Every structure is written in structure tokens, then in C-alpha cells.
Image: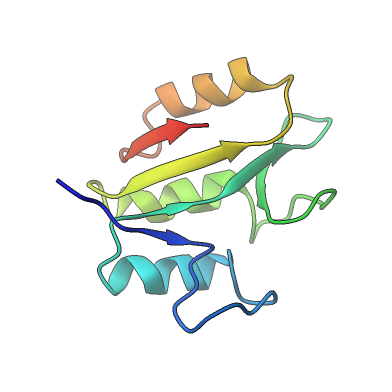
Length: 108
């Protein structure tokens, strides 16, 4: 089966303010995309967040937990997490194993 992911959740072309936002991701999933590919980073305190450019700061809007809450509404959607920085893989895997996202996921 082929799954089409919404890269940066772009539905109308590049728009840096909206792409990768929680609202854009929700719209892409509602439109029928099979998943989404975020970039994931971690703050020094261990909080995970999605980002396009580094460095950013974690906010409630870009927290990985906000996105996993969204993905619980789409249990068959794929979450393809791009891990760009090393050092927190064990914590990220533990978060994914916790079952809080309920969606299919892979890390790369």
C-alpha cells in the first residue's frame, strides 16, 4: 500500500508561517493525507518539539505532545519523524513506546 505524507503539511505550497503548524497538520490529515513528516528536536530540559529550522524554542503549539494528541484522532496515520540532532534518541523512542500517539511511526 502506498501512503502519501503531507510534507510540512503544505496544502497550497510553501508558506513558512503556516507550514508544520498544528492547524496545517490537522487540515492535511482531515483532507485525507496518510500522515505527516515533522522534524523533531529536544530542548535541554527534555521537552520535544517540532521544527523546520534550528534553533527554535518549544511552545505549546509546536510540542511533540500536541501533535501526538492530534494523531490519536487518526490512528492509521503515519508519523515519520526526522531526527536531526543526536543525543536524545532513547528518550524519543521511550515517548513513542508509551503509546500516547497510537499512530504508526518511524524515525529517520
